[in-house]
Length: 363
Ligand code: NAI
Ligand code: MG
Image 1 (cartoon, rainbow, N blue to C red):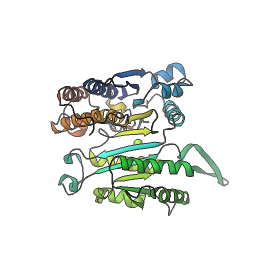
Image 2 (cartoon, rainbow, N blue to C red):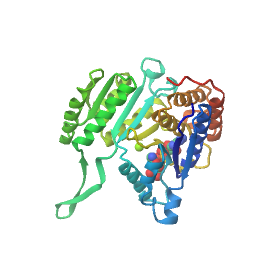
Image 3 (cartoon, rainbow, N blue to C red):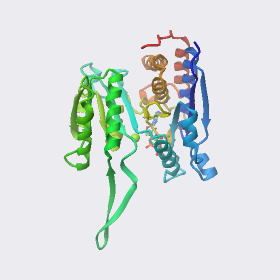
Image 4 (cartoon, rainbow, N blue to C red):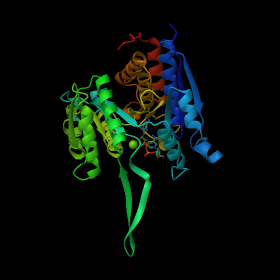
C-alpha cells in the first residue's frame, strides 16, 4: 500500500539553525526512506539574512500558503545579533502562530539517561522524570499591549497586560486532557497563580468544567511556585502540566534542565489536524556557529515529535531509539559531556536509523 506523502517546509533560520536543521532533515529522510513514507521538503529562506536583504520578514500571504501546502513546519532557530530588536523573529513567529492558529505549545521532558540529570534522586533511580508542559501560545502577556502610565510628576509606571479569554483557555485545557488520554497519561495539573492574579480564576473555572469530560484522568490544581519547588524535590509526582504562556516558558526550561538541558529539548506549536510547527527549544546560539559544538539532538527530537503528530508513530519511535543509542554510546556534543561534533552525532543517528530493525506500525 503506498502511503500519502509527508509534506514539510523547513525554516532553518539563523545561527546554528541551519546546522541543526540539516541534521534533523538527514534523520527524517533516512527514517522516511525506511518506512516508505514519500517525503517532500521545501526549504524556506526566511531569517536574518533575508530580512536584511529584503526589509521584510516573510512575504504577506506566506503563512496561508504554508498552511495549504504542508503537513508540518520544521524550524531551526531565529535570532541574530545584527537585528537587535528581534523584529524579524517577532514577525515570523507572530504571523505563523496567529495565522495558523497554533494555540497549543507542547514541551515533553523525558528522562532518557538518569546520568544526564543534575538531580541525585534521578541519578540514583529514586525519581523519574516524564513531564509534559502544555501552554497557551496565543495570549497571556502581550508585548503589543504595553504602555506607560504617569504615576507621579516625574515617573511613569510600565504596564504590560496579561490577557485570558474563556474560549481560548478552555480550548487549550481540552487539548491537554485529550493529549493526556491519547498518550495514556494519568494526571493533568493546572498550574496558575490565582492568589496573585485574579484573571487566573478563569483558568480554574474552565479546568473544572473540562475535567468532567475526562473521568479517566486524574486532575488537580497547583500554584506555580509550589510546582517549581516540586519539580526539583519530587518530579515523579508531576505528569501533564497545563498553564499560561509565561509559566510554560519558565517551567519548560526547568523540566528541560532536569533531563539533560537545551541540547535535548523539543517543542511543538500545534493546532490538531492542521499544519503545526516543530522546533528545538534552544535559540540560535551565535557563540556556537561553525564550531561543531551545536547539539543536533534537540532538532532531531523535534523531527520525531513531527512524525509522531503526523501519524507516523513507529518512525518517530525509531528516531527516539536512535537518539537514545547515541546517548548510550556517548556519541554526544560537549553540552552532554561528550567530545563528538554536530556532524559526528548526526552521522551516528543516521547510521543507526539505516541499520536498525523496523518497528511495527502500532507502537
Ligand atoms: P540560546 O538557546 O541560543 O543559547 C543559550 C545557551 O545554550 C548558550 O550558551 C548556547 O551556546 C547553548 N546552546 C543553545 N543551543 C545549543 C545546542 N543545540 N547545543 C549546545 N548548546 C546549545 O539562547 P540565547 O543565547 O539566549 O539566545 C541567542 C539568540 O537566539 C537570541 O537572538 C535569541 O533571541 C534567540 N532565541 C531564539 C529562539 C527560537 O528561535 N526558538 C529561542 C531562544 C532564543
Ligand atoms: Mg525559552
